[in-house]
Image (cartoon, rainbow, N blue to C red; front, side, top):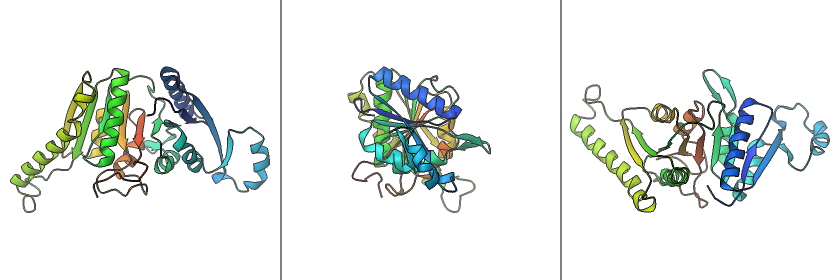
Length: 270
């Protein structure tokens, strides 16, 4: 996150929005950056939005009519961080349709904040998979952890071949080779952190055979922040959110920051 550009927080009348506003305001005050409070009048649910436009526009310059994601996407290039509430509880997860849309279009990092212990927790967790975007996420998380005096956990989860059920497709030797390669990816991901942040405590966690969404949400339960790229290996830059990012945002374990691709769109190994 930029230490000079403002933080933009989108607000509406909901507990999640109030939690996001408090989280953003606390962060802006601590880092001495401006806070922009933005309310977007979403016309998506209106049967005849044109009849409301005149009245809505009178509410002030910060009241925008149109797409929430589009409005926040336009703010992205000028801010250090965009903050939104997580949405309403739904079917055991979190209804984050707007957050997902915003994460797909904003060029700034997006923080999604829920209501549970938004200002508590300890430690920063970041997902890593060796992709270029993953490295950007690790850089963001390391800077955050160092600045906040928090320990950093770099987690790499992947599906390893089962030597029993997959015996005909992937023998034990292949599984061992895959584990070795993934350990190298994790080691290379954190290799430069010690020289940049000599006082930062870094934990490397390898989760073979554990589904990435479950691994990240479990690891980040009780954390101060979870950081991830908008997609990982095999993703398409600036087109869609990866399935892991989507899954985590719908089961939010703590305030979660989604790091976008670089301005030139590069983000993956593919």
